[in-house]
Length: 395
Image (cartoon, rainbow, N blue to C red; front, side):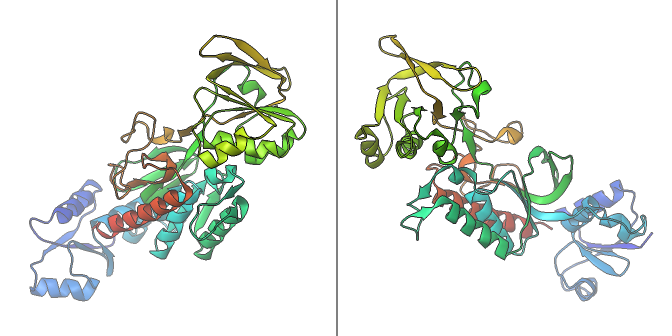
């Protein structure tokens, strides 16, 4: 086994941790006590190029401090350097793994790459929730931009820095204890990282009425941008009364024969788009109505609704149902490991820290107010910068 030398001093927390780590692994070492300005300190600086403690040498090779030792162990390189294992494939250790490919995750990837962090982005898709809308007219620098074009620009920016990506892959589990975090994907592979950024966004909230699940894709949909063209010359019900529901109605007004809006509350969206919907002769609005059941065997052929005020029931003869009643945060992976608010959002501080060491979160999955593309992008930048600060402070 290669000789291990550790330069340390009494009262140094990371020195004590490094020695304890070596002892737990059964690795013998020679300890050299170092005082600033001493001959041992000068020797350490000459051999390692660093004046911080501890400093560890394996053979004649300086490998850094306690944090570096843990990273070598996690990746399998420590055994190789000690001469205890044959040369072979080493599991890569990333500085940061980002889960999520929306504006928050992509922005985090750009900022991580600019800090020269070894970065992996894992996401089912690229674009996130912004891909569900037709265009964006409130992103700084663009008075109006097609969503597909904006996402393409985001992705091109990330590509410029050569960020490694796993697209079309989901994450099924996380192991967050210890200095090295593990990300386990749906295909059973494990990825190691020093820090983790969770940017998993939100997903549509379902109606939770009979026949909804069975008819998804058969007339029931949650994305007007994706599916509005499918309802040309048909009658469609939009469920909801906020901005997303109003935008769905506007998308459908261009192609559908008739649009019904069904909302539990008065319409709450922005006045400019609310007026556009209300003034359309194609749209009929039902305020303070709830959905009872969706009807249809192989495809949607109606929805039954009930007045919250009178109990009156109506059947709307529609061939499509666009559900736009809000979003649920994709925080299931961390429900038991970090603080979550009453609606399932990850609670973070002003630096996107979650309260779990080395774990950061950004975008719509967090409790940050104002769910906007530009806010998510800014939060992603903050999360990456915070991850960088965390890494450089480790010894």
